[in-house]
Amino acid sequence: MTGTSSLAPEPLDVVVVGEALIDIVESSEGQVEYPGGSPANVAFGLGRLDVKTGLLTAIGRDTRGDAIAAHLHSAGVVLLPGSMSAGKTATATARISADGSADYTFDIDWKLAPLALPYAPRILHTGSIATFLEPGASVVRSLLEQAQGGCMVTYDPNIRPDLLGSHHEALALFEEIVPLTDVVKLSGTDARWLYPGKALEDTANHLLALGAGLVVVTQGVKGSLMATKHIQLNVPAVPATVADTIGAGDSFTAALIMGLLLRGSDGLAPTVMERIGTIASMAASIAVGRPGANPPTHRELLVGMAR
Image 1 (cartoon, rainbow, N blue to C red):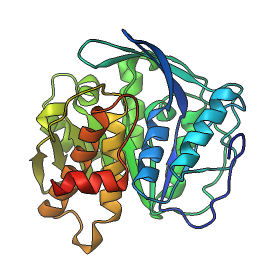
Image 2: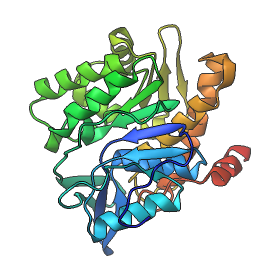
Image 3: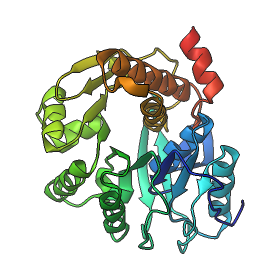
């Protein structure tokens, strides 16, 4: 897999579109590097949950790009053709504070070759830098438009203020994407940055009015809000001893997507929403208990849910 892209041997359940990069983590214990980037973390998390997943991204044909390719391959994720197209692999330097939270700086040039989806997956997921940073963001929006009516679209804006323009510009871009999606997942921090002063429930209602069918807002130890036009419920967080928070939201998103794939014919009934939210919270709890973007395997998630 290293240094190459692979064609999917069979139809994929999920295609993730977005950045893959190297997280350079600096803490009191020194510096280490992990493959990362929110969309790549989601794809990796899905692969570890035994979901057939492909990633369309832009990494370099360099040592760091090879590390990302091998990392994805280890979880069974297909690196889709055209993904090794960047001049160099992007990096995000994360400085870890005493409470485990991370502050990021980025070195990324997001370009994605225009293309059509090779086939319609059951779910198309995107988010983060890939949906805001040009010229690649325009290609991502084109793929979302192609997907309309053909599959479910999930979206996590994963706001990085240092990489965005003005608040007005970022909000406008975000609100152009929401109508192209079925599910919007965002953190409470994202929600408050996008809509300062607005209650999370009101933000969820606003996004539903823009066209989303399900809005999920994570709030760390306070749990998560799950909302449709007819239902709002809060799902408690699963307690955890925090090593760091890198990849926690992406682990939540991966398990959320898996839950959406497995929900059967019951749609988004309250019991279904609560179960999906609990599964996602368990995944995040496992992830924060260990360093870096290290999401649970399907077996680990099942063991956690059985406790």
